[in-house]
Length: 66
Length: 242
Ligand SMILES: Cc1ncc(C[n+]2csc(CCOP(=O)(O)OP(=O)(O)O)c2C)c(N)n1
Ligand code: SF4
Ligand code: SF4
Ligand code: SF4
Ligand SMILES: [Mg+2]
Image 1 (cartoon, protein in one colour):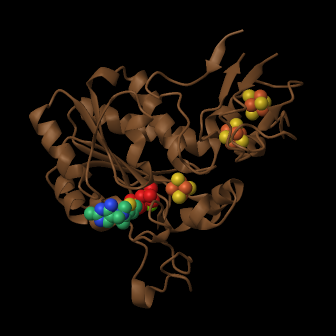
Image 2 (spheres, protein in one colour):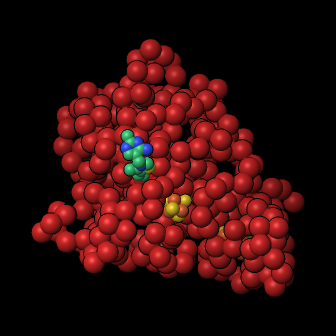
Image 3 (cartoon, helix red, strand yellow):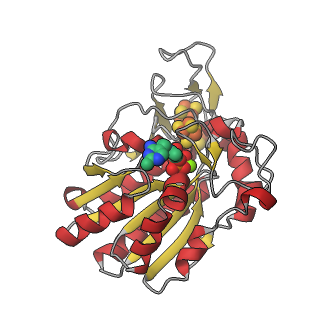
């Protein structure tokens, strides 16, 4: 089992990570962060640790553990 | 469990001022990763541009010198000649490298200065409000081409990388795209090779990076990457040029 840590406050809500996650492990959050932006939330059910999300993130919000 | 991906030493953890989905953030990270992997953080001097990346020196944790718009390669030439042991690179937009700085760019390349250039092609002048750049596509609407760029009055998208590759002094030119995970990994390899060339005294090496400006393309970040893949890459095909 792998997992990611996503910095909710740093996230700009571009949704690029969602678009590349092959496992559907990322979803738009319902709440807002301090920037007033709807960040992304990690579902933590079936992450493969592929790091696609981290590689595409323009704001380096994601750490990957495997 | 081991951390297999995280922020690298040369990238500060601060929030950037870039718009959501902006390609500058990706390329900043790639440069920082390359510098750390090559273990050259202490000897690197970045020449930062005027353009949206004007405060890149606040986002990187190595020495930087700010240059006037377009003059990056003149500044870098001076630094490298005075301190040949340093690894010197410029980071320049299309308005910077291919419009106001055309003369500085061409002559530094023609002199074969032993420098590394990271050229961010986002087809517009981002910082000043999304005006047309030399790299704007035919038909592309911008603040100064509201009806779309017309080649009869504004000319054609300038493929300056191909132009520079013609010069004898130029060692390597590669174009790469940040439209996908694979493209980003290729871009990193291209940037790494361009830094290594300088470390091995091979000479002038340039990497053109196709990079999203969702704000002035008036597209979402996801649509912007599709636009790079399906439209921009047709005019600026990624690959090794020299
Ligand atoms: C000598 C000079 N001329 C014009 C400007 C105004 N100016 C600032 S940024 C810019 C264009 C930036 O476009 P680009 O280099 O493509 O960078 P981007 O913001 O798109 O990353 C211009 C024309 C300036 N700052 N200095
Ligand atoms: S590491 Fe891969 S599987 Fe896990 S969240 Fe990121 S993109 Fe999805
Ligand atoms: S790619 Fe990064 S900034 Fe964009 S939504 Fe995902 S975590 Fe947030
Ligand atoms: S205007 Fe364009 S290039 Fe500038 S920060 Fe915003 S998205 Fe990036
Ligand atoms: Mg530009």
